Structure formats: structure tokens, C-alpha cells
Image (tube, rainbow, N blue to C red; front, side):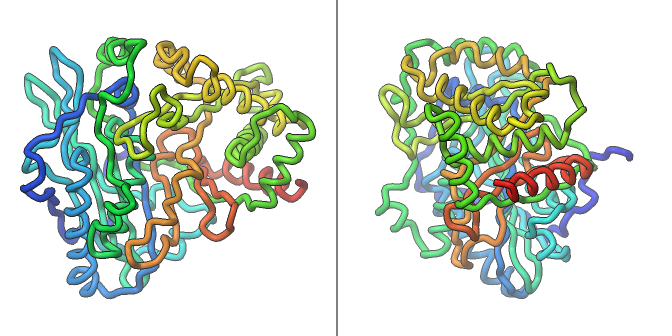
Length: 456
């Protein structure tokens, strides 16, 4: 099938606008990019979608909903100024940095779509390409002889007349991790719902910007920049349609999680056992089994994810720290072991060891971090699986005044081999995850996973 950069399923754009923070905010806010941020400088943009049941007319949407969203976005950006700014990447000298100046803004697209809202917000397999009608694109970089200037956030509000609304978020990963971006989304929701930022201020949810609070005794900032600046291609690579993938969402209920925990505790009582590790282990083993025969038994399989380390640094950072603050965790096994009868236990043990080695390292969570860029670059082309998101970041709590979201989708997983993971919307203590794969693989996974849950 022919490849094209243009989305053949694009929504009808009603208008585009730029939302600027209030001119009485600070004139300029500049933040250096630390090694935590530099890691993600060339990573693809992160794309999230929130679908809401909101049966309103086009007129009500344009005359009431959109103006409210614009006003609340302006107030929110007053507290999250770097998201209205840019990443500045010097050409010849100096490290990249984030900069906001008065006049900077965020792109907001307002669109309309006649697609089946119920179909899109289901858990069943759906064509991945369909969702890009609602995913905003970051504005193009501005290139001069001195620097490349990269916008960091784009937003879109799409109406499904008489059914619902989808809010789309696209951000450059180097501006902030999930903790930062989810806090922004929830802050915007709170301000839109309550008509102001008093609740945000009262709950002390404002971002913490002090980069000098991040100790760099190992000189990681300079080391990472020396590695990264040798890489070419500052702008994120554009992707092509069709993806030739389908996405489906699967549920794991609290009882399932407890059964998995009890099973592992009996066999490996010393292991690190959480709902996160049990879910990741089960999905990893089931996916390898669904792909059985696609690699020799001796071939290595890797599972990678990022761990928030704000509270594990010395000194620790507040939870509201703005930016990236992630440690990279890598588990390893083999194709043959993971697809075998004990595959789940093998996966759980591999993940437990990786977490113990990094997150609970007695020398600190950043022990060995100077080798991470090379270590993860060596995984390119290998059999790699990972997870985007975390049960800690509950976007189903993001109520813009229209009730809880109907569905969360992480569009970004179409571009790599990760699954998205979050709290279940409908089952207390449960989790939901989404996979995006070629239909043959997804169908095989669904069968293997359903059987695994049935026989717990």
C-alpha cells in the first residue's frame, strides 16, 4: 500500500488560533535542558487523546464550549509558561534550553468530525489511522543560522455533533515527562470546570521550576550533551500513513491482579511485586507467545520503561517539578523462555530484577546513568517492548466540567512497540492497557491473553 504523509481521515478544521499567556506574566522564563531532558531531544512527539461524552450542537460547541476552553487555557498557561514557549537548539555553541518570552503562544485547532463516536471510544480493535483526525501536529521548527527553535505543545478540540468532544494533546518529550504533562492537562481541566485557578493554587499544584535543585555531581548534563549533539536531525521525523496497525484496549481487574501477585509470591517470595509489574509481565509473556516463531528461541527480548525518580534523587525533588525526571529501566530475557509454559514467571522475575537493580539501587537511582544513552541506542533493531504511561497518572480524573472522560488513547504507541497503561475507568483497582499492532498479531495476542486471564 502506498505511503503518504497526509492523514487520509483528517477532520474538518473549523478554525485555528494561538493562545497567549497574559502579557502581565514574567517577560521571559528560560530553563536549561538537563540530562533528563536531553535524553528525549530527538524522540518522537507524545500524543494523547481524551474523549468525552458531551451531546451538544455545533452552535453550542462554538459559542460556549470553545470560548470557555480558550479562556481556561490562557489562565492555565500563565502557570505553565514553558509550554507556550519553545526549545532553542543552538547550532554551533551552547546547550539547548527552554525559553518563553512575551508573545509566545500555543496552537489550538478547533475541528468537527462525523465519525462514529461510540466505535472510536470502544475497546475493540479499531484502525490506528482513524485517530489521527484528532491528533494535533506541532508547528514546524524555525531554523536560522544560529539556532533551531522547536514548538513544544499543540492542542485540538474536535466536536462529534450531538455525541461528544475529543481533546488532543501533542508535546515535545524534551519539555516534560508524563508527570508534567498530565499535571498540565488536569490543571486545565480544573480551571475550565471551576472557572478559575483558585483550587489549583489552594492545593499547591503549581509547577516547580528551580533547575538548580537538581544535583549533577556526576556531570551527566555535559556528558549527555556531548553524546546527543553528535546526532543529526533536530526536527522529529514525520510519520507516514497508513500505519497498517489496529489498536485495542484490554482490562485487568483487581481480582486478576491479586491472583497474579499471589502466584508470584508463592514461587518467588523475595521479588518486587506490584500491580504494574504483574500486568507488564503478563502482557510481555502473552505478546511473545502471540509472536511465537518470529524469532529463534535464543534471541534476546527486552522490556524497557521509564521510572519517575523525583522522590528518589538526593536531595529529592517535589512531585510538581516541571520537566523530565526519569530513570530508564531495562529487563531482558529470551524469546524461548518468554513463550514457554513459565513465560509469565520469567517475565515477572526479569522485571523485578531490573527494577531492583535501578529503582532500588543502594548507590542511587542514577547509578550507571552515564552508560544509558549508548545502552539504549544499542537496542535499535532488537526485539524491544515497553510501556508508556503509568497507573500513577490517572487521566480519567481530568474533568473539564463535562464529567469523566469516556476514553483515553495514547496515539504515540503507533510509532514504536510500546503499550499504553493506565488505571481502569470502570473497575476500581483495575488497569487497562492498549496495544497497537498488525491485525494478525493483535488477534493472536487477544486469544492468548483471554486464555491466560481465564485460567488464572
